[in-house]
Image (cartoon, rainbow, N blue to C red; front, side):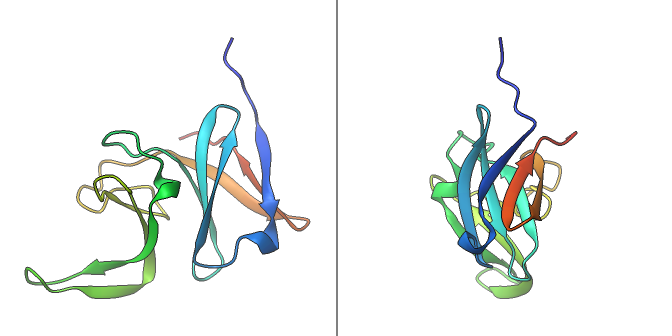
Length: 124
């Protein structure tokens, strides 16, 4: 019978500063929780769509864009988590890949309450 867990405490709120991420589980589901630069929390399934690498083993970076090949301009408001295996990048706010917005990892509900961070199942 599958394990069902509705919510899980991840860590104390002060253990996850802005611009950082932490791996956890919600039952059997691997989850990565990210605190954005502005303090907003995001939770994504911790598995790359390409070949299943743990996104939490990758890097948290500012998104870049450019008008021409080889031009990289940092987006000051958007963080991405970059897969450690092949470099797929996911917008932490939406779970969408940067190369195709139709592809995305599952998002989960996450909140801070009474000094701890809690992740919970969502309807996505």
